[in-house]
Length: 178
Length: 267
Image 1 (cartoon, rainbow over the protein chains, first blue to last red):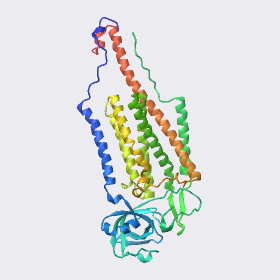
Image 2: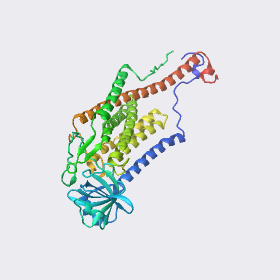
Image 3: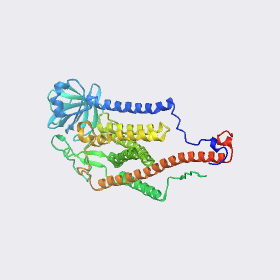
Image 4: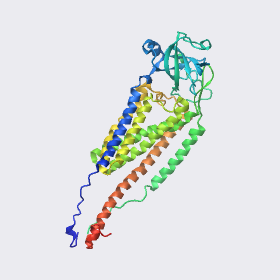
């Protein structure tokens, strides 16, 4: 640097000015929001016992423990569906099967679009004692004096993507896909 | 007088990146043609009832969804590796790479959630399933990297942004194994299938199209990453150029004896 006034100026970079308290609060707020969202998701996922899927065999075995509690059950509908009405709502009645255990189901409301015998489903509902409407139309009912009254159905697809003209689905005993 | 001059480019494009972009766009068009035109829908016959079962046309979305998911993993792992590199070396290259990978990965992760949701409505009968562990761990992954990006923007100090970002990235990436292995570890808490490729339950044109999807989305990731990295690098150079220019102007003013200009009181 040259010139008579150069010495009057110190061009050494000064430390950056500290951020204002408002500015400092933003990252803290963002972190808190993200942490809250993550904790919310984890609590929602891990804290809700109804979100665990029981097999039909486990659901039958735990019937007395489950009582009136809502739970989820996974299994494969057997051929033979009966469409009926329950309490003024449309319903479908079928037998659900997994691991050699059977349960009759009364699903109230519209079933899933891809709901068909042989396609595994996850149902949410509770055990109900008493007769099953339309049971006479089922091919192989459990007919044990209990049925699952469900109102939420999602389809659990398999991992088979082999496409051949006219290929039959691999459906093993008790309807489980393989 | 010695002046520090920082030169900066004006574009993120180059001959190589333009070729890569053209190949990527061509690849995307080809993938869409195969996915939505040339492959068959997923239809099988029930052995007892003879009825058609399967995912039908909804399966076509998986040629996008699955490769997007895989390259989300790749982007976030790259972000974590670059973040670790930054913590060790403290050089801007690592930080710029980590930031670029996180941003592209977050976009990919968002697309994974959206395509999965669109596919899930006809196939699962739901847009979203709170009980599905893979969905939840993927949502957590998305939130953590969205938080990473927000955190970086929340400070003007680039060193603080880089340091905080690196730490968050290294924590967030721990969720990746949970996302990937969730279908094996919590089989009774997910609607997601187990691995199709691992059990070779895919073949012929279906397999080819999925592989094409991996190739194309790999190119998309590389292309976006390249440009985002260059944007980050140019931003950094631009900031440095601004400081260098200001200092040079002050020095010139001092050398010229213009004290008012030097202290910024000439207006």
